[in-house]
Image (cartoon, rainbow, N blue to C red; front, side, top):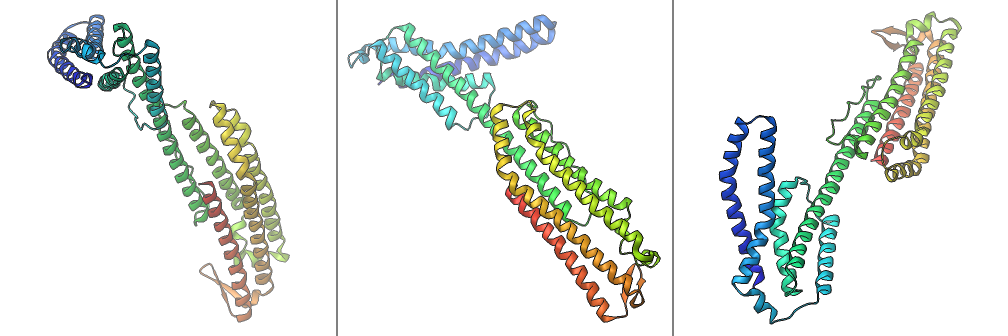
Length: 391
């Protein structure tokens, strides 16, 4: 088992020589690059890179082979046992499968820089190679052993790239989910707040990979939520146009004979609720077709649509319940309107507020207002429950 120390010493010598070469060649190369024109500079840069890459791969293996012969490691190991070439190949396949399995399932690597991976994996490749041929194939041909080293190095490189791709994608997806969660929370807080007009969500940050499934889905989701916000703002805007928010204005009520104007406002509010409830349902039911049209993988499309279908029934139930509560709030406004219109001698307006002279009228008025607040609070609870389920 003298091969492992020899492999480690070979790595040390290679790093030492490559370091000395880089210390001399890089400053000279930089000077030459500075003085040379474009094509020559590119040629010099590529030449230095190729020399360094070849040295990183070849030198450890060269020193290992030479030191093995000088120390008679091959002969001493040969006395222990020798393996059939097929056994050595099977061992190599098992090692490669183990390497790829580790990087596919376990590794947390996120570095996909080829030169860095090549430099770092040369060490690991030579150690694995030394261990493998200490156990198997101690008297195999030089071509087989050299080829095995290259295959192990390639597996390490490829495995690292697979791990980096997987982990970077997972990292991007986690960041995307966090931003969507934040947007949903912000949207829910705004809808539950005092401001009737909601601010649109900011555009997602620029992605290093704008064509990835995560980026495409995030941009689509951002646009979808902004369309929902736009529907809510349009609903409020149309209520303002029909002067719904002046419904309980005392001065307007006293001037509204037989509540004819009030009836127009109330009926218009009911019509708007029907209109925007349908618009929101159309928005939701259009999601599957929109997602299927996105430039993302079929697997991602199917996963998204399946998840949507699972939560669609409960989500629509809550949304419809919120609109039903909106209708009940209109009913309470109607009851309040009837009260103050039939008891106009029991109150007057002071600083924009009702001031009652009759205690019974005041108590009934407060009861209607409390009912409206309770209905509004139920809407808040339903939105929060929907948010918790979606997150």
